[in-house]
Amino acid sequence: MIEKWELTIPELTGDAPRRAYVYLPDSWQEDQSRRYPVLYMFDGHNVFFDGDATYGRSWRMLDYLEGTGTQLIVAAVECSRDPRGGRLSEYSPFTCRMPGHGQIHGRGRLTMDWLLRTFKPQIDAEWPTLPGREHTFIAGSSMGGLMSLYAVTEYNRYFSRAACLSPSIWFATGKLRELLRSVPLAPDTVIYMDYGSRELSFHPNMAAQFAATASLLLERRVHLDCRIVPGGNHNEASWERQIPFFMNTLLYEF
Image 1: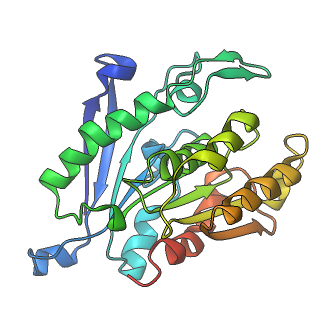
Image 2 (image 1 turned 120 degrees about the vertical axis):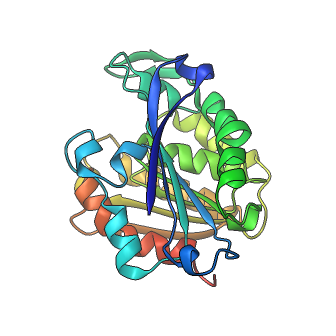
């Protein structure tokens, strides 16, 4: 089942409401003593329902979860809909200039602090979770993919695994690489990272940047599942097709 409600994030957008979603496996109805790993996802409006999605097409995650019987709670929150770069600011770990957008004030740390101090405690209190780091994952695409990479590294004491689909690693590359080189990482850290073959021409030296990021993660002894998706593009339909791949990585040995 999916529960959907509205909440506010005062630290980011005051009293402006946004949607939150939680998926709970049906097996809990049969055994209410069960507890589940939790996958937190960015861009929650794009995760489950086409009717809520920005461009009318979601990841259709519900179809996958129900069709496979995956035993996992998925908690997702909508991004800011402010047309003046609200999403870019919320999902940027760093402050820097972006071509076509000017100066981006990175509020990724504020976003993560809210998720860990407010949202995750609410999910753990109200839902049958396994709250520890070993069973806490995070995922997203594009800027949400960058945030997932940031979360599992900068906040490695809270997240053990991440899925970073089409991550915007072309954004603030110097600061990102500095983070990946220096942040403490537990030896059991697992990261799935992909990029669509049709996306490689979107930004200069994208393939080289992707390879450099993967190499840094391997140097840090991260368990990395890294792939270029044949024919993959930068949209929800393409990311939906990658769900079996990243789920296999996130849930391996669970």
